[in-house]
Image 1 (tube, helix red, strand yellow):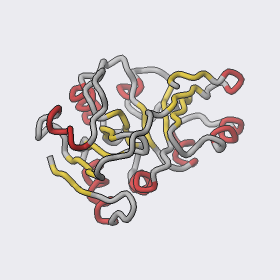
Image 2: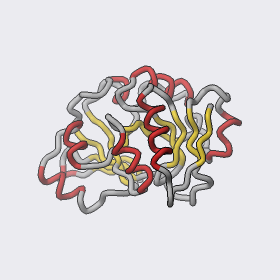
Image 3: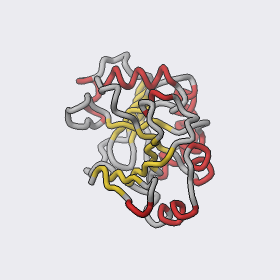
Image 4: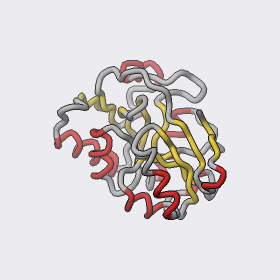
Length: 196
């Protein structure tokens, strides 16, 4: 596992290029999100998604969410009505994950065969810059074994074997933040809160 130290304030373009190249090659990475450290891969890479399920010991019946940046990209992957767009502009970008009706361009394993897709548009500028370099959304799940506390980057090697991940993006300790809220926006008449 390669460790790449980055700054979330003055990052280098070369760093973004290295992370994007690893993901394009089907890699699995640990990386800083705008909430906690996450475990991710490109959402189009089915074998990498399977690796994440195995690494986390996550039940295959639990879908994964994706990160993306940009309304056009969002519209490519989910059905987006004008009313949803207007509503989302009041809450995004930031730590809110929205559940949409998927256009089903991504592997079924990601959504466990459901028609829903959970998406977050992060506020972290470094992460948004990375997302703009990727050809597909980025899978995002907490960096931990399922059911255990989320890890910081320093706890990585205690849980995951040295060769389990292809790259660890080390931005140092992140300030404590709660995980993202999850809301279902498929029917705006009844916006359902899935996770506070």
